[in-house]
Length: 443
Ligand code: HEM
Image 1 (tube, protein in one colour):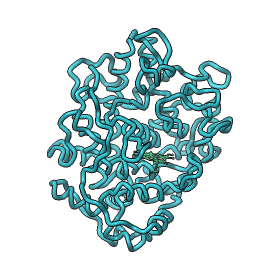
Image 2 (cartoon, protein in one colour):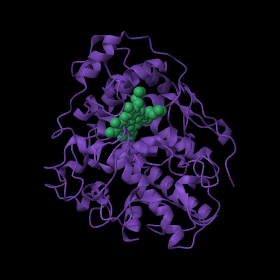
Image 3 (cartoon, rainbow, N blue to C red):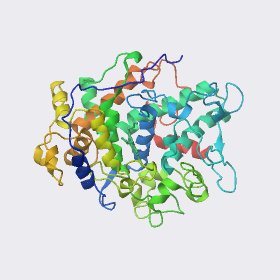
Image 4 (cartoon, helix red, strand yellow):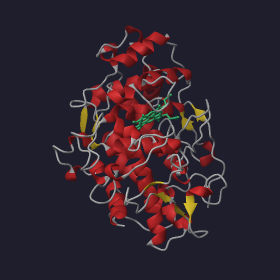
């Protein structure tokens, strides 16, 4: 079974628009949003891998390449991994192998530079993947590679055909999104509330009704920007004393052409004891060596590296400033309007006071007209000490994710077939990220 046409539009859930701010208000606000103190703004409850799993999820659902158009399908189908598949002219070059049993091409495999492989790259080291953003930093690139390898192993070692392998990969991924990722970022109380009371503001009943809520893509899901840390303990070559920010984007070998780079031995995250596990499994974290591999607090402080984005030269390189401008261009409602809308829809919401909004030195102009993205971060900071999202952000993120999974007849929550293979605990539906990493590491 395949999906029919899936709407590629962004649409607002809340049909209100915040009064406009002057440009300097956003610059002023962006400038108080960090740089975060990387030794203090730490969320001990969430290992750092989840920051980039979040980015990976973002890139599966939403990409506003052209204003108002979503170039990703807003369902959890991993189009950022599979693209249009091996039978399409657009993406058949990403695959190899017999028809019906295609595997992803892996780059550099078995070469002296890198025993465990890299994304498949062209001669300029530009990754050949459907969404270039999944090569934006070394951790998300490693996640892309992990899921490619998961697919490949199901074919080479478990006798699956392409469709069976894709089905298994997508269901495992969706299961992780629901039960390993979502509760961490919205908190278990929000999940319980939705279980008890149902979805209140985003509840498409069929696939033709789904859309990408602009509040989610333009503001609430951008909470992850505050979880980015300045340094990470990548592997035993580059632990917390030796890693440095440039490594995060630039990888080794420099960038011969803008956007191109390569994962080679010193930077490898998988295999040889240098596993992605060090980003997901707190039990293997060494408190000294790996203190950096926890996520940043979800708060109004952003890492230094996000004040000097080098990835899109010529554009505004302060990420906070960009998010604030984009939110206004998208004509989003402000935090107060969204809070009121949710309360009217019977969602439990405690609204931030203007004193709370202004704490930390925010410009007066935003006290009762707070950009939604900033509001959501402030709420997480004050309501949950930066450990997970608060009432407004948690509701929009949780309802969007659960609503999209529910509306998709092929998703793991609506499945009628048995799992073709199921990693992890056979007695329940929960698969964890650690299950996938162990499966791929061991091969
Ligand atoms: C180093 C890490 C990251 C960098 C450098 C980065 C950079 C960016 C940039 C430049 C944009 C476009 C901003 C604009 O012009 O409006 C963007 C959009 C976005 N980011 Fe990030 N990001 C990072 C991590 C994350 C994470 C961890 C998450 C979520 C967990 C996230 C969620 C989003 C979302 C939802 C969008 C909107 C996408 C769209 O609809 O086009 N990002 N990011």
